[in-house]
Image (tube, rainbow, N blue to C red; front, side, top):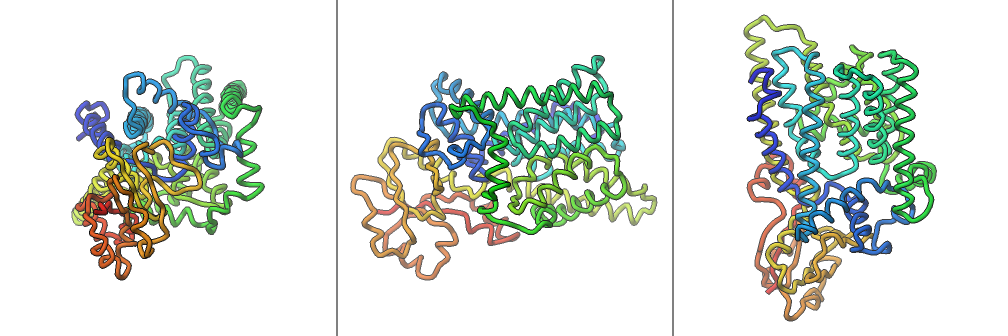
Length: 494
């Protein structure tokens, strides 16, 4: 476990295995946009759905087309090899995302290793791949993940000293930055910080700065031409996005939060005490190292996002791969501990953190994505694909989603879905269809309501499976039982 671990085939094999396991179990999507604005858009380009079934963002022409088109291309290849299962398509996209992440992180880690002390190098390497939430985020076929990885590549190229031809280096930096923006427009905030650092701290030559700007501009123009072809008319999607979500305030319709909400997310979401360490590390970096490249990238991103009323945890996914480096730089600032008692205390703290991280990593890598509801949809597809199926559920427990847009990507022709207001409806049995396998899907929150158990007995239901594995439910219940409210159970109605 020394610094040579960075080139260890055994270590990278272990990391790859964990990412593959995470991709396999991480069925579904973390947030609606990951599905309805990427996979459903890809489905449209494949001719498998209609514009009227798509999310409102399609008619508004505010979403980039690059990632849906990449997905459509990959799916066409899979179909060529006679793989027509949409759940397999999604799995392959997650596996590709995981592979891209491992390669990108490897180069990023190697570029920053010279700044890390030998004693901390192994922790930096391991944390860069296996901080508990990173495999889950890094296997997402989401705009936040892919955009973040491309920007991570740009930072790696900025740090690189191996280029004999600087022109090529700056062209590649521009390509990565431009593509990062095409995937997620908010990456422009990261790029502003990185370019400002190159100008004021790195003092790059004017011609190199202009080369980056020119390359970014060319990439963006090509991207907007691609968007125009995708939507069928001349448009500039980034302008439409800014007009609709910022100027017209549409984003705020999905909820608003105070300016300091992201600091709460950073503190709470990575679980205690890891979140405390991350926030302390960032604030320490801000105070002690004002010339740090990562700080210059992240600060504009956080400031502008804090000013925008609508906030979500997933917006931080673009920068999560920087957290291991920020943590290690924080730890490295402490002086070498000579006192043996203090040394023992530090070892105990590291041991506790290792155990917390390991438990969270195992849990997060063996559960469905987001609310996990698509785990049930995949189960129905795998076990009942050749039988007529009738699913009865409320919107809160819908395995196929219950958004305004229609979930066509994962829908099966043999499955009929009825949405009910609640299990307390007296006419619930009228939704039962003769000649079909009839199922009722309920969330734990619905099941916990008074009299529901009694109603289920009267309906003569049989439990088939749950979206969360029993062992995972047990571990989660010790941490926060409220997190199990989204768990849904599939019952057969006999």
